[in-house]
Amino acid sequence: MLLTQDIFPAVYPWLFLVITLVAAFVKPKLWPFGLLCTLVSGLLYNAIDLVGLGVVTLLFTLAYFANMPSKNAWNQGIKTVITVLIFICCIALAAHLLPGFNNLPVLYNVEKSINSMPFTMYLNFDKPMILFVLLILYPTVLMNNKKIRLFKIETKLHVITVISATLLVIFSLATFLSLITIEPKLPSWWWLFALNNLLLTCVIEEVFFRGVIQNKLVQLFNPMAGLIVASFLFGIAHFSGGFSYVFVATLAGFLYGFVYLKTGKLWYAILIHFCLNMIHLYLFTYPLLKA
Image 1 (cartoon, rainbow, N blue to C red):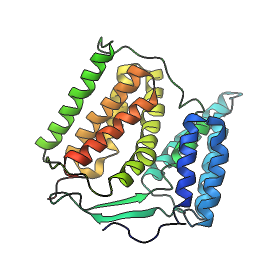
Image 2 (image 1 turned 180 degrees about the vertical axis):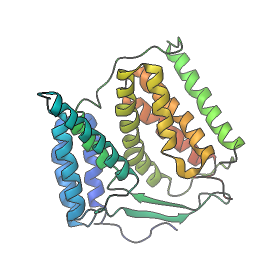
Image 3 (image 1 turned 90 degrees about the vertical axis):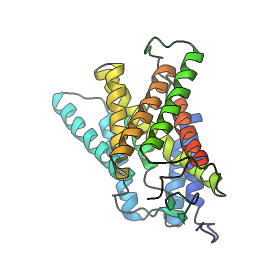
Image 4 (image 1 turned 90 degrees about the horizontal axis):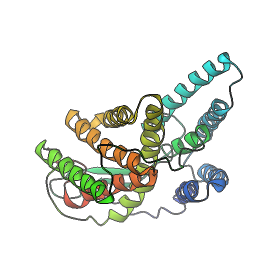
C-alpha cells in the first residue's frame, strides 16, 4: 500500500537533503551550509539521532584528515588506512548497517503490476551521506573530466547508438533470464519513485562507483581496466538479486561507466542510470518478476 498518512513535517529533513544534493552540483560552496541545515532538521524530526550524528561527524573528520597533504611516508600510510576504512563505512551506509538513522518508509508492499514482486521504498537518510563524505575526501569528484577515446567511437551519433543498443541488450537479457517481463504500466506513485531514484539513488551510486572508484582505477591502471573493474564491483553490489541480477547490473554499470569516460561528465552517467530505471519501471515488471 502507498503510505497515506500525512508525512509532513516528518519529510522536512529530506527536503533540506535534496536541496543540499542539488547545491553540491550547481553551487558547491553552499552545500556545507545545506548539510548543516539537513542534519539539524534530521535531529529535530527524528531522521537521525545523536548516534547517527556521531557516525557522520566521525566520517567527515576522517575524510578531512585523509585529504590533508602528507608530510612523510608514515602519514601517507595512515591516510591510506583511513581511506580504506572510509570506503568500508560508505558501503555500510549504503547497506543501512550503521546505527543512528531512521529512513522514512513512503511505499510499503506495493505491486507495480500483477506480475511484479511487492516493493517497499524508503527515503534514505544514511546512504546520501556517502556523497558528502566523498566530497570532503575528494573535493573535485563532481568536476568534469577529459573525454577518453574508447572503441574508436567518436561522434555523438555513434555514442547514442551504442547507448541505445546496450539498453536493448540489457532489457533483452534480463527478460531472457526471467528477471523481468514486459508489462507496460506507470503506477500512481511513479513521481515519488522518480524523485527518490534520481536524487537519493542514482546520484549517490554514480558518484561512488564512477566518480571515485572508476576514476581511481583509471588513474592507477588504464581506462578499460577501470571501466571493467568498477562495473563488476557495481554488479556485485546488487548481489541480493542473485547471480543473474549481478550479471545484468554489471552490464548496466559498464554502460554508465562508458558514458562517463566518453563525456567526462558525471551527470550524463547519472541521467543514463535514471533513464534505465524509469524504462524498467514503465515497460517491465518492477523490481523483478514475481515468482
